[in-house]
Length: 602
Figure 1: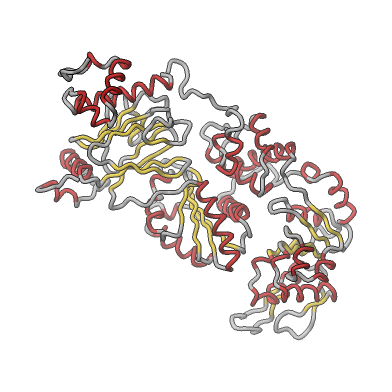
Figure 2: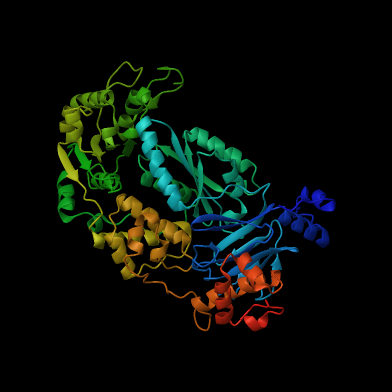
């Protein structure tokens, strides 16, 4: 690393104040001093997260979408070989390589063959990917990709569930505007997190945080602290959810996060939240609902996660004679053991420490309507016994109260587990299973139901667009066929999460296979992308081969100039055999362009 002395060392301590611009010469000296010491970094943010590029001496990097680029960005608006960043004695510069969408610095499009100097604070745009030049003293850690976030989330959910540890997630989203991109505000957030926490890029304006070992209250306090120091903090929307209060699996938690953000800025929608029952329920199940709905029979809904058990419970309630009465849903996995009776039955004032007032439990709140007990398999043996007593007697006593009350609610329960197997291993009471399973209904998973997947995908695309105030995405028939081939382990909830994120990410209103998350990666290579073209540019734009040749030509010319025309020295700089360089000189027609060639050149 170059050593600085004199004014260069003094300049290194300076910070670029955007509100009081430095004189141009002093700014140039500052940028040059920072680059010579490796203190500048260009960080790009795209759908795969963030990518850092150190602007150190002798840096020569081509940025593009092609694997041939030194820094590859995952964005359709980025050309195969889009731009080049070079650091020389004058400091870092960027120039456009004839890209289709152009290279932008601070909102100004660069002209071809006119390099632009870069300095701390500059914002660089390549297609929808954006970058910012940062001083290493203020640059945060890199944002992970959404795929990496999903991978870690699955691991942390399993760990937290197995060991009964707290786990929280958060999303922070900037409202639409010129400074909404995560490149402009996310670095301090990522930098402040602990090593076991994770910040990832959900969309270009939204960051998702994985916060193991933090309760919802602790995570909320952390967010308040992090956002308090941000200039745009008061404008950012945030939502926190935790396991198991807001969901018992990864897809449920993500769904809760997105719903929370949507509720905080909900647009008026004309599209119903869900498809009519006749469009997603099998005919036999819909017929069974009509027969069961008017009765007070206890119903057990069985199905995998995300199959719509709560939706089915609401449908049962809606078809019943007491549809105008309350519908109360309780996630059994979220009931703390010490608050079991108080949650179910309520409590009188002074019943225990902190009970300053009388509070009704879920049985009382459901009144003459429906009480839906979700994830009933998560109840402890003791809790199962308490619930069984109420189901058998129809009566309960609030904590600290003197008199019993009568339960008038119709009870619906759901499970994604095999209760018979749980009974066999002794973790679930057989008598409760029989009492709940008076009328069992099984919801089929989404896999193998291609027509329904296509119908739901179209519906979720319209709904997500209306809720977020964006244009709905187009789903081609070939793509819908691909979606129909996926197993969808998270079922409808997973499908909605995928479609909603694609709606927010799509730059041109069309969903392509490349936009799908990695868990659908098996589909990506199965067929060609029906909506995209293999070439990067259209019309008279250079082909991929021509762009690669341009890139090679630029590298070789730079090496020859640095070597003062000596081919052996240039080959060493390029780290290739001299005979390979000679072959490239011939194939690219470079020989006559370089003065002072090697005497041994052919």
